[in-house]
Amino acid sequence: AQSVTQLDSQVPVFEEAPVELRCNYSSSVSVYLFWYVQYPNQGLQLLLKYLSGSTLVKGINGFEAEFNKSQTSFHLRKPSVHISDTAEYFCAVSNSGGSNYKLTFGKGTLLTVNP
Amino acid sequence: NAGVMQNPRHLVRRRGQEARLRCSPMKGHSHVYWYRQLPEEGLKFMVYLQKENIIDESGMPKERFSAEFPKEGPSILRIQQVVRGDSAAYFCASSEIYNEQFFGPGTRLTVL
Figure 1 (cartoon, rainbow over the protein chains, first blue to last red):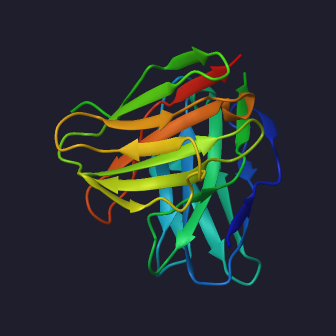
Figure 2: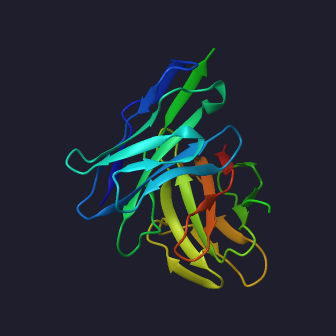
Figure 3: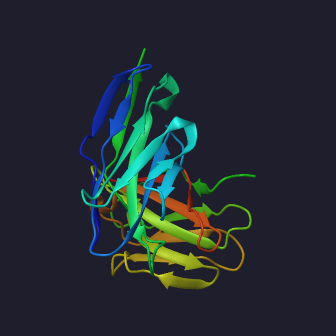
């Protein structure tokens, strides 16, 4: 079985500050990793994904994440946040082999960007 | 191109009633997935369907829950004889084969 731990349920930051949202996973097999964002009253939108290759993944809206296999982590970072980045962020994992459609999500981190 | 549509967005049922949640996938997508988010929990996979076929229902509760994706029309998640523990947000996602899942806005089910 797989699991995802998002270490912070809420992260408040000021506009233009850097932010890191932490994600650790547990799995006995190779994985794919994802970050999704959910704005109020909307569906989850894919920010970025790691399938293979370079461990530094760049996504939309200036976000990036780094896959660290030894630490089983996939932390999300942005060097300078905007008010519009206020949303809930979900880390997710799936098998890299069969059943790779089956996503397992963390509980989410609410990012609040203050002026 | 409209995204994944779910309705209703909010549904209130009394214990023992039936809940029907509908999901219309994105145009051109023939794969549908349902996830449930219980309070204070992450989204959990329930079922994966293709048109007229259930591919993987390993995350579905054994009783009272069923899902279908008919040849025509939306995918339906049906919960019979709801209980308070069924109160949750139910998300639908769709995809082309082996591709990114696109999520709908969810249906918030409240059981009184």
